[in-house]
Length: 124
Image (tube, rainbow, N blue to C red):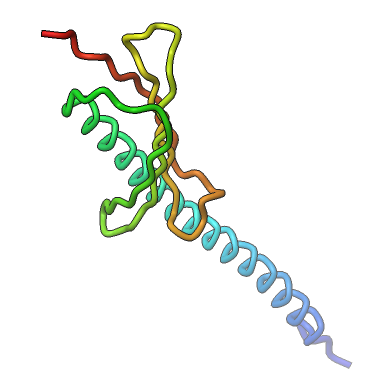
């Protein structure tokens, strides 16, 4: 009986199963990378929202009242919700401002947090 060279059907099926598992793992990794890019984009835009808010406070040169302010802002085509907490400091001429930025539906998930200080303008 002549012996034929080549692969049996079982060997081909095992090889295909191994390749399929490897391709699924690669696809899952690529999908996770895509999700990470979206999260990084949201965090970058939220950071800009926080920086803009603090810059506006500094430009206005208003002495901010203590407490919490809330609002909405748009950046890069995305909507964000922010919370600004103004706290007294040991130096009476300064106020600490903490800005937190969230996605509108998830205020438990902070995308950006920025702390700054506002100086009281001298009396004229």
